[in-house]
Length: 308
Image (tube, rainbow, N blue to C red):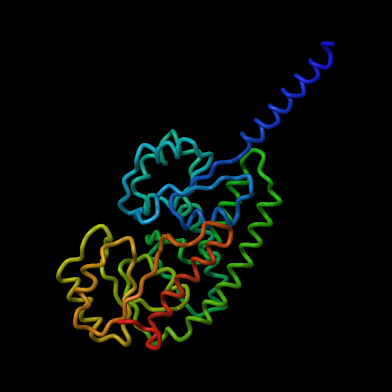
């Protein structure tokens, strides 16, 4: 009589252990900002849970972390961030003893890889990538740098216990193909943009523009946390007056009021793009959708599409 009960109990115990091990095997990945989440989701396997630290509408330049966000860091198995040049609020935490071993600063990891990508692409496209020794931290807007980051993400996830390495490799190859196809499409779409003078709110757009051979003639603020000085505003206004079809690319994370005061009385098109991909669906195709959203914002600058 006791044998069936004992066997049933053992079966329940084994099932519980098996279920519990699967639960523990679920990897918790934390990305500092939404664009990095999009890259992680393109590479991660289905059993990996991906979330973002900085909430929609907030800027990583000046974000103040709450206790609940600190718990997200503590619960994560691996943390992807751009690096101290971007998420300054994370610098002390992620370079310290508690999180240093499970955080991956993608800007530092992928500098050499991006140089290789640039060397390969230079022969195919006559455009320069002068990033001032890598000081511009908005690396995710450049599709070649995004691919380099995706490779680092694959390598980092492959080191985790229980990782499905063949699936990670396949996801990377799928992402590589999607990036190549989207890049070719956007390059064709942006050909008419050569006649437009672009002005940006701050440096976030620079890498994308350089990658596609576009010229940004002026940047409104050198530090997005501070309003620009009167002398700098006057210099930008002079450039706007002398520009050919000037278009100002603004960002939803920052105050719009003084953009209009700067351009008042000037024939300037205003378009909005979002470097933090706030309205992009968080899925495996999200990064290519993000790239297209930037191109679409730029295309509204064309005279035939412009709204002043």
